Image (cartoon, helix red, strand yellow):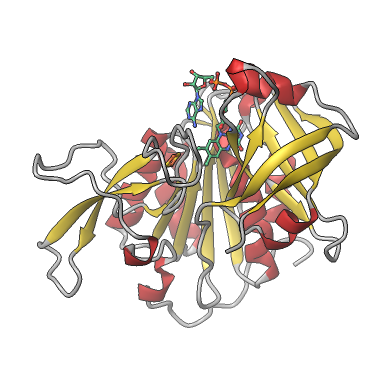
Length: 315
Ligand SMILES: Cc1cc2nc3c(=O)[nH]c(=O)nc-3n(C[C@H](O)[C@H](O)[C@H](O)COP(=O)(O)OP(=O)(O)OC[C@H]3O[C@@H](n4cnc5c(N)ncnc54)[C@H](O)[C@@H]3O)c2cc1C
Ligand code: FES
């Protein structure tokens, strides 16, 4: 994959609700090649607070046949980097590198896909939903947050999904509770065959557990702290448990994989979510080609296509 580095131009800056900012950036080459789940690394201003680029998932892409394709990122203001980004307006220049990392794998056959997002972590799921729908897959969504203001673009989520369930922990929008409270019932009702998720770690761990209990493939996009963003510094490693090549399930081996190059999308059933590995685990990174593809659907035997009972509007 070609890594593109260059300057984009801000086309627009808008706000989603009270908290989230969205920048649409003209970045033709990245826009043409980026896949859902990949990210861009952005230089967020000058000075010591901004030495490191900050990673952002690509939220939406608008392809314009190469000459003016745009990418959109969404963020909340956390520190100096995102504060700087929130000050940018149309025509500002943005120094960015991308597309980076390994994105979500698409199902190999028509499938019922459940997308589960928490807060701002839902960002890459919107681009994914667009692509899944373009390929003819069914998309269902569970979108959750602590409170209504932290839900990311629920109007768009409803538009994209056949079934869209919204929940907040304080009950200020949708159903009261966490995404995991709605998970099993939604999987049952929507005949889910593959789960995609992005959000806080405890949520990713819980979603992975439920999917694994049902023997469903689950792809998780993690947001580890990153320094370099291209595989050199090892800041972003995740412990994984993998079946040995040609070995039995019991013969697992433990590896550390870099979120920025082998991830950020991992097979949720391989991630050791509580971080505990046997003391013998070597801190080695693995070559990307040695990881089982995050797109486990290839090992998943999809049943025959059912009738499309909940075709999303516009599908
Ligand atoms: C692959 C990837 C994709 C991401 N996509 C998005 C996105 O689409 N939208 C978005 O708003 N943010 C996203 N993030 C997180 C984003 O990179 C950080 O919010 C950003 O670096 C903060 O920069 P800052 O200078 O504003 O704050 P900093 O001063 O760098 O950090 C402010 C606070 O946020 C914490 N923080 C920074 N990065 C992370 C992180 N990755 N996870 C948890 N806490 C963190 C810091 O520890 C600190 O407490 C993503 C991160 C990764 C790794
Ligand atoms: S951020 Fe440096 S190796 Fe991943």
